Amino acid sequence: MKASPGTSNLCPSLKSLSSKVGGIFCHCGSPNKYKRLDTKLERKLVEVKKGSQGHGNFKSINSIILKFPRFKEELKKIRSVFEQYDEDSNGAIDREELKKCLHELQLRLTEEEIEDLFHSCDIDGSEGIQFNEFIVLLCLIYLLKDQPSPSQTTSSKMGSPELEATFDTIIEVFLFLDRNGDGKLNKKDMVKALNDSSTSERSPAHITRSRFREMDWDRNGNVSFREFLFAFIHWVGLDTDEEVPLTGSFHDIK
Image (cartoon, rainbow, N blue to C red; front, side, top):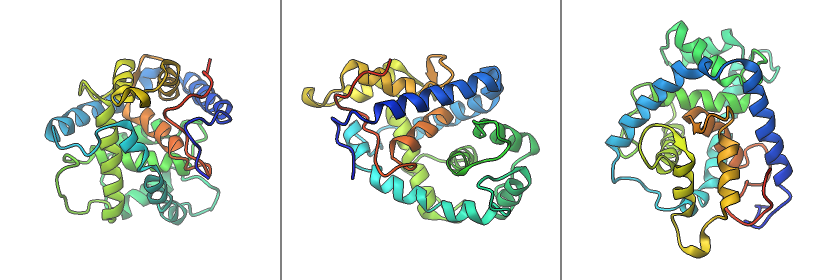
C-alpha cells in the first residue's frame, strides 16, 4: 500500500538512511574525491538544461510524485541486467564484472572514467556495486555519454529505449528541481520546487529541510546529480513496498 502524505512512521527510516549514507561519505574521504566526476555531471546538466528550456513535462512536485509507481516498475526491470553480470551471484558487481557489462552494452569508457564511476557509486566502500548503486551508475553513464535534452528523440544507446526513456525522465526531474540551471541543487531550489504549487499543497518548512538533508549527504550545502539519484531511488520506494512522501505533515527530522 502506498504511503499517504500524512504518514509519520517512515521518519525513523529516513533519518537512518540520511545518517548512514552521510557517515559513509565522511569515512570514504574528502568530498573532493568525487569532485572530478561531479564537475563533469554539472557541465552536462547545464547543457541539457539549456537545450530543454521550456520543454519540461513537470509543472509541479505533484506531477512528479504521480509518476513514482511507473519509475519504480521501470527501475525494477534493471535487476535482470544486474543479475546477468553478477556472475558469482554475490549480490554485487566487482570491477571486472562491471568492465564486462560496459563492454557488452557497448559503453566505451576510459579506465579513469570507470574508476571514478565505481568509487562514486560504491557508497558503502564494499568494493562491489550493489543493485541500487548499479542503477545510479547506469544513469550517470547515460547522462555523460553525449546525452541530448530529454525533449529530443534519440536512437537507443543502451540497448533499451524504455530504460533510456526512464533515465530521460529522471534527468528531467532533476532539471525541474534545479531552478537556477547550474547543474546542482541548493536549498533555495528545493524550497521553490516543493512550494511552487497551490497554498494548500505547499510543504511545511521542516519537510523541505528534511528532503534536502536526505540528498545533501556530504553536508556541503549543494546536492550533486549523483546524490540526488540515490535519494530519488529511495523516494520511489525501490527498496520497500511504499513510496516515501516528499510532501505532507509528518514529524520533523532533527
